[in-house]
Image 1: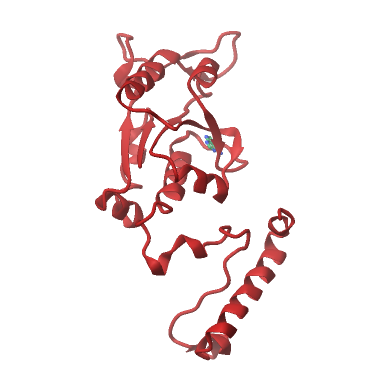
Image 2 (image 1 turned 45 degrees about the vertical axis):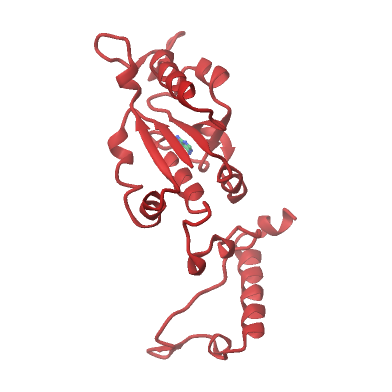
Amino acid sequence: MRIDILTVLPELLESPFQHSIMQRAHDKGLLEVHLHNPRDYSTQKQKQVDDYQFGGGAGMVMTIQPIADCIDKLKSEREYDEIIYLTPDGERLTQSIANQLSMHQNIIMVCGHYKGIDERIREHYITREISIGDFVLSGGELAAAVLTDAIGRLLPGVLNDETSALFDSFQDNLLAPPIYTRPADYKGWKVPEVLLSGHQKNIDDWRYEQAVKRTRERRPDLLDEE
Ligand code: ADE
């Protein structure tokens, strides 16, 4: 999969993909992330990418031309499945959306800054708008990093058997059950007996019950979604 991210702050996104699982995805040739700065496409003398709002009001708006030219160039090179704008007024990101997006070949993500982007970019270029939660970040970069991570780890071959995404929280509308590792007894705090029993059916049953219990206590809304 290839993800092209448009950002006026590429430095913010240089590190997140250079570690751990995202690095592995890259090294295995399964995920390519390319950063593009709309500023490099600005036809203004000062390489300006923002301007005052029509109608007045505080805050600058990202202008159409640099973003449009950057997207047009990318679209002339390959077909894109989605052009996503990260914005607090988009649809809320869920595991199911990450699953859908992980099936695509090429995605563009547009990070907003200042007050946001000119509405005409949203009308004419953007195919999907995604929010990572009901809070406002100072720009779309961290949201793009979150979305890229959520998608990237789902690409076949990125995770190995032990870390398989099949057992993640949310993958079956349940939160994950509690997990433990050695020692089995730390200062008298013991690991549940069943996990040490070697009886796989009992272990699976216990994990399922715990997952349901945890979901009922913390996120009953997930159980209602069936
Ligand atoms: N940009 C600013 N806040 C955001 C959010 N919550 N989700 C996605 N993009 C954003």
